[in-house]
Amino acid sequence: MDKNVILPLYLREKISPLRQGYPQKVKALVFDTETEDGTPYLLTFYDGEKVKFLRVDEKPIAEEFFKYLLEHCTSKKHSYILYCHNLGFDISAVFDSHRELFSLKTALFILKDQESDKTVAEAKLFTNKIWFVQIKLYNGVNIKVVDTASFLKGSLFQLSRILNFKYKKHERPFLLSKARSLKIMKNGIDSITIVTMKSWLSTS
Image (tube, rainbow, N blue to C red):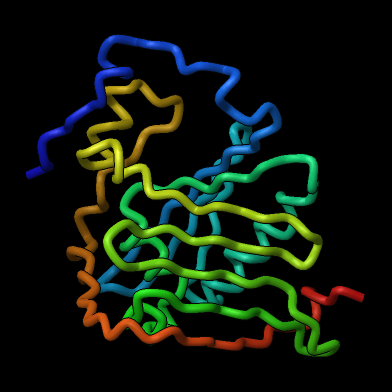
């Protein structure tokens, strides 16, 4: 059974935000993951215009995640915000092969090009009380990854219907078992994980 949905007052009363308090050039994107027994098989992005479905059953999901960002976040004139609902679940699916990152309060993931050994992207993960991620791409673009579950309580399935989203969260296929939860033990020590990816990430 889904959890109760709790909407903040400004949404219930349809109060418009103060425009002067919001950056003029903001590019918002959304991502979501699907897993079977804790193993990711689908990565989905939405940039406000198009939905992109990426099968990741035979591909490294972190590689596909950064490849999409490198292709769609290219302007330093914009502030990029990447949203997801329940970041703890989705970002742990993205870094499924690097679960050591989530035993820490903060951790740094560095992505390097296999041929040039240049840094392609960095992701700093904050996983203490409020989860968020700061990503810096080699092209100078910064991306903030924000958890909408921090201010919109309830499942994405229910929220997408209550708020009448254009693209709604589908029901989980009945053939799939429940997702495996991520057990976290925090020790408060910073960590650096460096991964090299294939040459399509070349910065030369």
